[in-house]
Length: 288
Image (tube, rainbow, N blue to C red; front, top):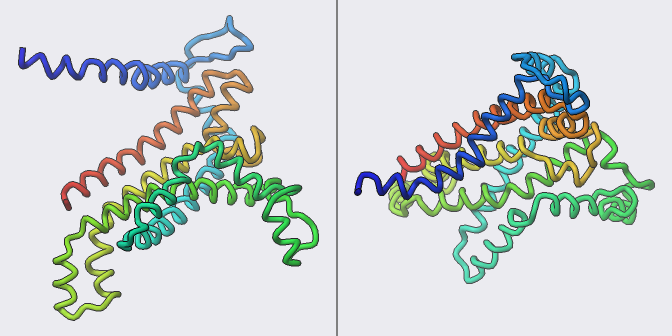
């Protein structure tokens, strides 16, 4: 009975994972190997890797891939730097530390679509705060169409996603700072180290695994952006990324086979980053 008990306790979670994770993965892969278009429901058959070939030779896919890479680079850079700096601010021991931490977590707690709507009020060409502020400061004479240009739209989406990603990165970096033993700082000061050398030789090297976790989490978030893009620009082609491309292919063009292929490529991309995330966790455990 003792040998069976652990498996009985794990059975509910295994069942949930099987239904909600493993079955969709297998089913999506099987769809991606078929010609499955709802406009021709009687013509569903196996076509092998033709959907993947069609996706990888599609100009729309590579347009979305470029947008995804842009979001990935900007979000990772801004979230990592801002989260690291915010963790230094939150590490200050004051009686307001708990309140500051709660305020810092707010962007992370809000739903992504709500974040997108809030920022749309800021950058809207007609009633946006950014245009009104710039006009009152005599910086511009006419409102700027922030959301009608590909790169400005992607930059704004990056800012929105970064704003949502900073709290997690800051909390992880804060945990890393607080996990460093104080005796290491004392030893470094005794050896004559100043603030810069202590940061470069003690703080930064020991925080690298925590930074890796934050970078990986920000990367996964940037790849899976959907709500913010829809909130800011709708389902248009201008700022679409791979996830929006998958949605449009599947539900707008009713091509479940090709849409599943795009979804599977996005999943593989995210899975690669997930492997780095797990490695970062192992490095953190070794340090602690």
